[in-house]
Image 1 (tube, rainbow, N blue to C red):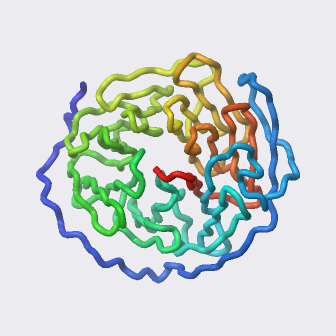
Image 2 (image 1 turned 120 degrees about the vertical axis):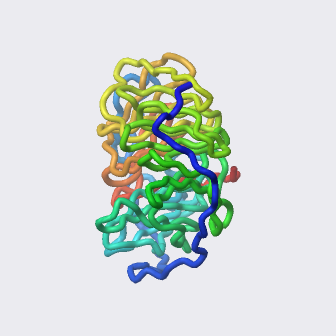
Length: 364
């Protein structure tokens, strides 16, 4: 195990937190509900040989049946955000059965926010709004229709990788990195750790502990669940799973155990810049997003890679609750890959999405 010689951990004296949320002049409020009336759906059936890139083709199925009526076997509802006119973000909710609907959510700014990330339940969202001429951001979080400012001078945040409604985030204060956790109603924040010598942000956490990306050193600092520093490793975190594995990009993709040890993923064709990564819920697959599309890697055997040729927009991946489908925002619309027959759908192609999540029929 490697120690972190440049990192100093201090006592956990909790600074006073502001409980009131400031009123921002650029905060947009209001609800507007409309029923979407057009969806373009594309589908291809490349067969069961997962060796070639698949590209979507058009279909004429109706969206009124719900997302399950368009994508056979899809198990969850869909929740997503897309850019509306002006400064506002729009929320699009598509039940498993029935037409989708849209509404404006009170998150907006003169500059577009970072991608919107939903928790495991799909009920809460979080996004970091940039502050002009500042390295920090304003963290919005909560139920989409009433999301509010959680904290200022935030460097990064991450939802718990298995428990819903539980958010970790980092702030910077007088040269220190402060790691916070907020649960349930996201109203009260608990200080977990504070350290100097780390210039970065929390990027993943779970029952196994926390992963903080040290941007200045291009390394990962691992904390225990109690906030104690236990290891550093080179590379960039792509995702974590509940079992304590982290997908790391370090001139190649590898698996880092939160308890120590690194295991490489050596597959022909797995090269180039990786934008994002996501473990399937059952731990059998790792999805990787590149500038050309998605790559799905089986972690249980040495089978060949599966690739989709639809280029991404926002660098984000999301698996369905049954670990069968994996999605990402395309340049337009949402790209959906089925890991059973490797068919690819592109849905809602008239919109530019900034975040996607699922609404499992059985909440975690």
